[in-house]
Length: 350
Image (cartoon, rainbow, N blue to C red; front, side):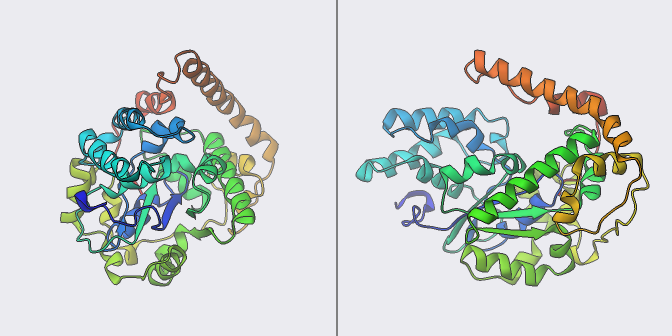
């Protein structure tokens, strides 16, 4: 393909996904890869969630229109300066060549169309980042069996504290811990089945030794490490990507990574930590973190139960409504509820 800087070998380029729970450092890692001159990775842009229903469909010209229509309907489509017509044009050109366009290639092309604020040379890898993927690892693997999955962990207590500073996630430690544990188990299962295509890394390790960890991640993907990845926090360039949200939702990206202080979690001195431990079970230790003891776990597990049940009730309701409305019903109720409960807060995203 020749138009719009789409690589000719788009179908064979390495594709990787950054998988991690919200507040785990996924935005930071994405920004590091965005700074790489040979990587195309848009900001959080959950087009996949919108178009996934087309993953098994045989592609025709009408499928292209459906793909574009679903993509632009994503509530975060505005995160990238990209028009639906530009996507349609690129997909149509690929289809007109030999009619071999498929879902995987359409996804790659869409991500490759992102225009980064960082200087780019030849694109050698395409990436994607969205925290929601961490709960749908198996489904994602079926669609992209050869993709590289980077599983990013962060200590559960740090995740809980970071969530408490936002207004787009529910401040319910039982739910946070349950999802953290679920994503960890799904990641471990994928690594057991796809050891060559899966790699885990801790947020804390990247902060403590960014160069060595980025070298390993680049080797895993199949590209050369570039030191400019460490200059991802350039304010002028980040502002072009995040606009006004840089100083609120993504202010933490401006920090010098070498000056980030990592907490030492040895005790659960707050109720929210104790509830989180009770609901996380042994997953904290299994993820490679030091064991934190909590007495009377059953009490803190029960304390978190009402919130968990409300959360599940919301999920069931959303699922039912999406079923009867043929997936036209928005599933963002937890986020909207968080916005109502916590109002206008600074969302220093990682």
